[in-house]
Length: 206
Length: 206
Image 1 (cartoon, each protein chain N blue to C red):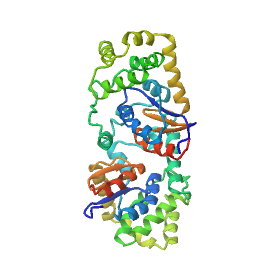
Image 2: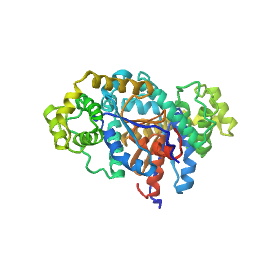
Image 3: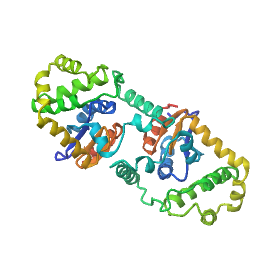
Image 4: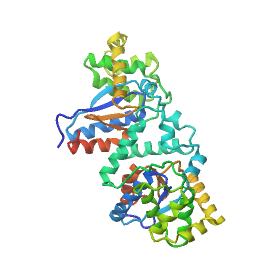
């Protein structure tokens, strides 16, 4: 049985394709377990800076066969979960600072869930150039979100600090990349760990 | 149903703790699927050289939280599969050239399976200093293996070349580290992929 006191978190940055793929698989896990993921916006660039980590493309780019294998694993995950709408964003890597601050702002405005879904889809299904402020605003408006309010609130010191705090706390708890999950205090890294997260929830761990 | 024409390979080096953990989990997969793994000795140092890869300790040593996470994952795997006898070898990293040439020699002498099991256990359950020729010979003798024959045969150009050939072919097929599995031509990297290997076998893929 799922322990109702267990906290369940998904630390994400819209710039991570594997965070998107996790986002698409999470509803099924919620349905099967009755647990609900708390989405925690973090700035992946900040996580990398704080941990001296780099993106897989940078870390593995010089290693023969390794990026090819990563692509194969992504393809397998997409096929296994029927995520045919996924498109690798041609503008990758994308500066996600505005989008991530926007996520904090959207929390304050009570539109976090539709905002998160709109950003993930624009990035990883619709190939949008989300670092362009005009495109960013347009995507929000098309999704029926209060674009002006989100942008205005994103510029506040409180929102900027909240994103920094989320990022720093995530690293303090053990994060080093994206996606990262916490079942209680137990960390799980990578989309392929969602199966273990689900098993941990069903076993009442955490 | 498992396709009886599907080849199933485990490319291994005794120096890899994750290869040992895989070796201990493989019998259960063989029992559940009816498939049989072909063990292919490769020199991991050679794989790294050919692919410009490095060991996790070298690659991840400078990244905060990452090695701690890898240790946690290893602990989870060990607990999940009840491998309480595992000990991290205090002599790690170990030069495995003699052991790996010995594996090829043992194939020719018809003692491959007991040799592989003895080497893996000496390395990852018994904390032996296997780069020491005296210890290496002693472990073989204690396991009832023809130590002198294995050592003599290991020095032959044919055995040396066979290990080089295995290593080069493995990289040509997509390997970059240990453990690596092939279901037909489909590559799977890492002990955590054994679950996917089992599913692929049971689905008749490969």
